[in-house]
Amino acid sequence: MALARLQGIHRVNRAFHSVSVSPFYGSYWGRLNATSEGITRSTNIACFYSVDNMLGQNGSEFTIQLGGTRWMSMMKVPRGAQQTSLKVTMLSPGFVYEPYEPRKPIPFWKRWFTPSGWRRTKEDLILEMKTAYAIATLRKKKGYSKKLFYQNAVTLYKEINTVLANGDITSLRKTVTEKMYSALKNELKRRESMWNRVHWELVEPLVRIRTLRARMIALDKNDLDKAFIQLTVEFLAKQRFEAYDSKGSVVAGDKNKEVLVRDVWVFERSLFHPGADWRLCARLSP
Image (cartoon, rainbow, N blue to C red; front, top):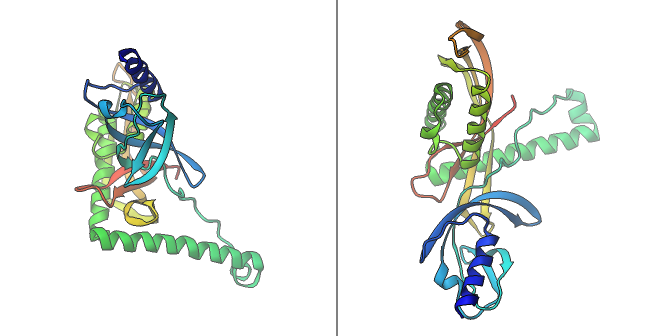
């Protein structure tokens, strides 16, 4: 019997790759391929589980359940395992829903007097309606204010760029998603291989800030309160930049010159996590 339990633990441990467990309870961060309506995504999921419940006497399948609904079947567990439900909390979808891309302008006559123009007009209207719906939902659930959001977005924009310039991003764990945090770490490593340090400065006020797109990602079609909102924001600002080598010599940029820079960032917020705030989840190519 003891051998069967050890074999069961070994199989479960292998299935979850690197899982650190205590004798009674454990938790892990994993990259799981979640399939929803035929679309496979890589998702950040925090799971909490009981080893004793997992390795019971009956049952044949180990499953993950979300909100009482079966979310994903992970593996077949051999005899000696008991079906259990895991408490799953999705902290971020891990992807940008419909990333923003500028729409190519079309002539007035083509838009209104040709079939292709009519189709394009319909597509544009649908895109705008999706943005309006997401903003309306955000305003209803969280009391969204464009002015306050822009103030928050500019603060995050300045803070994240300043921390990156200083070379220590550990303070950004609460202001960026896990996927974005990993991307910033890799970016910082590449930069450090080229330059020893950099100077970055934002010239305020910004030239322009505007919302390009808003999208809502619902986790359960029967419960739209369990959703994330993503706002794509354009920053147009003057900046000063200068890079130095290990000897302190300037190798790129000029901090005495102002450069006009356009950035497109995607901010994300949960509608169902208590105390959730806006976090950077992606930076798109301008």
